[in-house]
Image 1 (cartoon, rainbow over the protein chains, first blue to last red):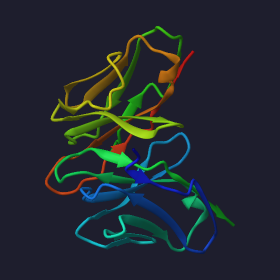
Image 2: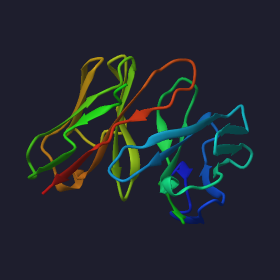
Image 3: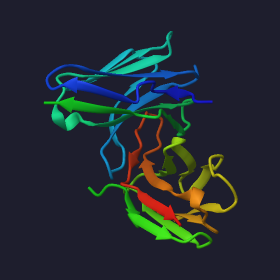
Image 4: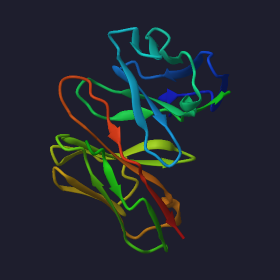
Length: 113
Length: 115
């Protein structure tokens, strides 16, 4: 049972345009959500997070939106740059205080010049 | 500051052999996590420690896998005996466990190949 799903294995975007990566979850007890970025042969790098009490969090070019009623979150990257080409994972954490993260399968983002 | 350090980066060994993966968490972090990444199952949590104590080992696939954290700056994941299906990338991550939301920080992983 996959509790966190990233339905798009890949996404291709033109440099300078907006990249939108999507993530759906099934467990309404998740209260903290994160996005990680991963380059080949490296570990995932933390990008941005959002608590379930918020619906938006912004950090520079990166914005995460959370729609609790739809159990959906998205990551917006504006403007997209070639260095953003990587695999992006969304992750969710269960009850407050527990440290266990559940990861989606990842979306490979390619930024074309 | 140094990030999470894992060793070795690559390990190739024959089935039946013992494999030991090592991890040094970020100094000051008190939670440590072992993950495994495969094509079929993605990134899955194997076990995590809080203040050197194992909290949740429900992701450990079977008794051939064991993990220890003898002190705050070192952890090992051991597979004995190893099997070809254990081939994967194993990541270690650490975080500061507090009442605030804290992200986990990952090492660069150990790519394990069991022949």
